[in-house]
Length: 82
Image (cartoon, rainbow, N blue to C red; front, top):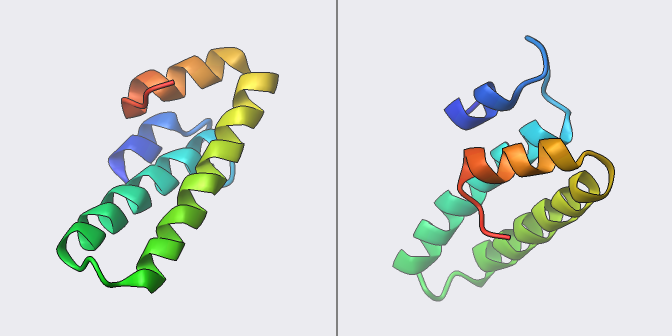
């Protein structure tokens, strides 16, 4: 688990909360975007990147609607723009 995800955990064994999932997806998005910058013709990875971005977007919308304080915390912790 990434350092950012560790900071957003609710409890010790938390792996499924929206906050942790967003942090893990953010790490995946960063690595995939770096990979795609190097290998521009890798269409399979670009599809995976789009899926990860869309999943993170849906989770962020859920947090914004249901847990606004947590939403703001996640945005500041992960340096995301919204």
